[in-house]
Image 1 (cartoon, helix red, strand yellow):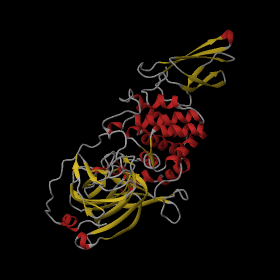
Image 2 (tube, one colour; image 1 turned 60 degrees about the vertical axis):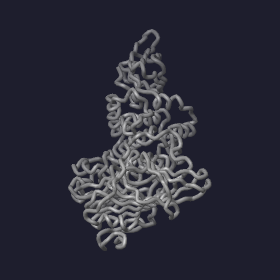
Image 3 (cartoon, rainbow, N blue to C red; image 1 turned 90 degrees about the vertical axis):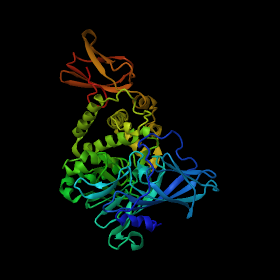
Image 4 (tube, rainbow, N blue to C red; image 1 turned 135 degrees about the horizontal axis):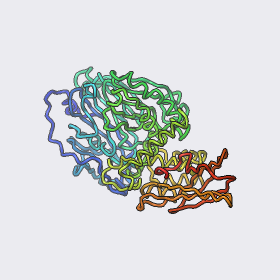
Length: 555
């Protein structure tokens, strides 16, 4: 494929005039439930982008490869705020409409199962998605920042997490820049062709290829003056997408030259993280792993195989190793196994929160995990969304980025681990990942995998923690009944009356003299009373000594 020379050359012409661009639509609005692009299945995107060194606009071309799932459907591509030069189907100009952020291309005359190619050529100043500006050090840069559905501001796609496809990028960028993208580097940097790009030596062409399907919000490029450092090879023999002869993935970090030394502490254990998650969850799903200092609005953005981090955090010298572990865990959960609807975002953020913390349990000891879980618990107790369930129907997708999705979602996994035990829990996690690799899922798919592996009905657990608000608040009282040699323990749930009374498998630690006895109990309803035999009066009764339950402070 190639860009049309006339408009790509205009990037190099001082004072070039652009056509009036359409107004962009609002970012982050929740899509409707149900099939997002019925009648079509996009399988591959061929993307070509031309970038300039000192310009606020760019030129682009994408060829969408798809298979029809109905006769004469319409291809709806999300695309907004840029000038469309032309649209072709199988090499011929075709009529289209472009309204309310959707570029609709009728596929008249096709039958179900036909393979079709649609090419869109466009240009303009991106309103969002592709960030063309000076970086934190004042040097020009270009970075994509898509989450949740901002790909449409720079690249025509079916912009929905459940719609996955492979990608090939051809990026023409100033010779001063390095270019990173998802996938593996197929070729480049090589001098760009002079007939399409102007004077020889001004630009290089980089070709990156993604051989496994990814969601549109994961499709990114980054270009700037950067240094690249490797922290080691990982997942050797457990990375089926790797294009290396040794079957490993190279784990690197890409940072601005000024920040090379500041970045090292944050990324020094990144290869260890990949190995840990590979061992714990399953094979590494992508071709490589690049950790990139960039213009993302978030602390980190988990783009498949090319994670983007806040440029300011790295430039400030902060150690963001916790963020690095979180984002690397996303390569498995969020990127390879993706929520089919944004409202099930805990399948991405809750999983990355918990597994990101689990790395430190392995690397730094059990106390490191306890500290992180306690920090998460405190953030939940202070949250302003506590009276909402984890799964809600928010209109703004940005509103989903809250403590329910992150720390509470992580706590759901921690509690499930406590209920099932390590062996069953991690076996269930591996089975869930195996079943749904490179596909899109809902929470019930995770529940089904855990039920199948454990042999238990877990509906009670998932319903109360995902679809009900809040958490339990316990009041514990004990009374020694000397003539019977028992301690009577009463556990009351005193949380907000609009929250449920939770069903909680729990542990009681009873200390009597030098004797410490652990009892497994089941808490249900507003009040549960137990009688436990003891040789003498207890000195203390502690509920949940291991910290496996998300709860308010016990009284």
